[in-house]
Image (cartoon, rainbow, N blue to C red):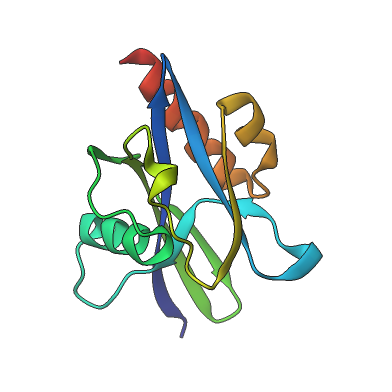
Length: 141
């Protein structure tokens, strides 16, 4: 019997001028760490939107989004005796969000990047698919 684990991944973005920039975070795991979005566990009984906002607040210190978007593309896989479901969201931050950003100790670095730089930096295919969907949604708006 496998254990079901729900996780949240949140792509924080801001609009500067007429284009979005995406926040990439790097874990504090030395040379092996890769760039990715805010991420963490969903607590028992917690709503997805609440988990997304909580993780952003705990990981980088931003309290409220201008908009919170469900990317409607959960990813599911089995790893040993664990079945993992990841829910992808986007968090619209203020243009000057970097002034108030504060990284949690589990993160070692951050950077803002436009889509052409952010996309290839993401190590996981599911993250690249999620940022592609977000960028497409933002470009269509």
